[in-house]
Length: 125
Image (cartoon, rainbow, N blue to C red):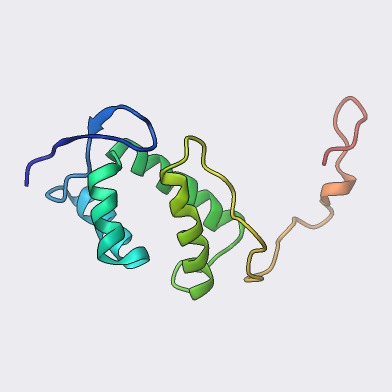
């Protein structure tokens, strides 16, 4: 199947769609199917541009790293499903609701968020 132009639901313009004949397109559709089944895979292929998909996977990588999620866990699956909504929104959101407690939060020794003082003498949040 040749790459086609679609009206991207996220970016609201005509853009190249996800081409299943390319390695990136094939990986995108495999991931979509793993997260939401054949129906989600079909909707993403028909409505999401490759540009929007790359933006979304970059955002998803940030969320996975920020919350130290194991991408193979069921907790991560729930967060990924929540993040799928970001493909239809103009601006991606952070995770909705409480996140699962996975992994340990790491802060370098001696560095605590509440103790960091900026160069103008204000505490950073």
